[in-house]
Structures are given as C-alpha cells and as structure tokens.
Length: 119
Image (cartoon, rainbow, N blue to C red; front, side, top):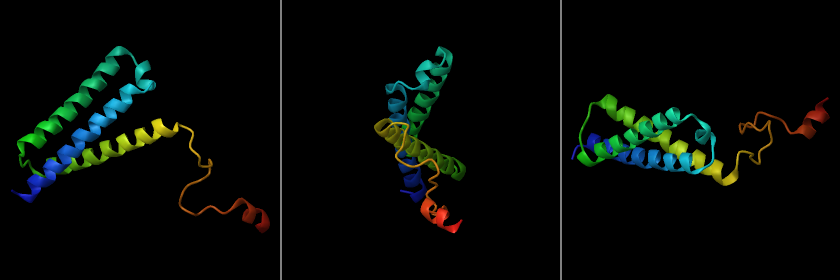
C-alpha cells in the first residue's frame, strides 16, 4: 500500500473521531449553540455531519487523492482534534481557569515582587 494512502487514511480516521467528539461535546453541553436560531443550528449540525461522514467514507475507501486534499485532511484532522480536546477541558474545568489574567506562559513577565524591588 502506498504511504500517502496510509497518511490519508490515518488523517481521515482522526478527522472522523475529532469531528464526532466535537459534535457530541458541542450539542451535549448547554452552550451558546443551543441558543442559536434553529436554521443556524441545523446548518452547523449538517456541516459537521457531512464532514465526519465524508472523512469516514474517505477512510473506508482507502483512496489516494491528490496531495492538496491529503494536506487538507491532515490540517482539518489537527484542527478538529484540537477542538475536541479544548472543549473537553473546557467542559471539565469550566471557563474560569486557574491561571492569573496576565499569565502568558512564555516567561517574559517578571514576578510582581521583583517588579516592586526594581522601582
């Protein structure tokens, strides 16, 4: 089997799982999507369903599409896998995190006590 076909199949499987998990978390929680108008909710649900079923079909057929489509599948798989993990953490821990508002995780900010000692 062609290695590109394997990459496409793995990306499609991750995309199927990611979109499915994202849909479950999106519609299972009592979030903003529940307050949308009916047409917006239906369009979103239909779009996500078509994405997941298309990725599943792509995985099951083991086709070898052009490189641009494989790149698209890999990118979408990454985005939806991230979205599923992000929403799972958001649902588990809530929107208020334990970080301080100025925490940027890059270490460029000084400790407040050292800032006071510099002035």
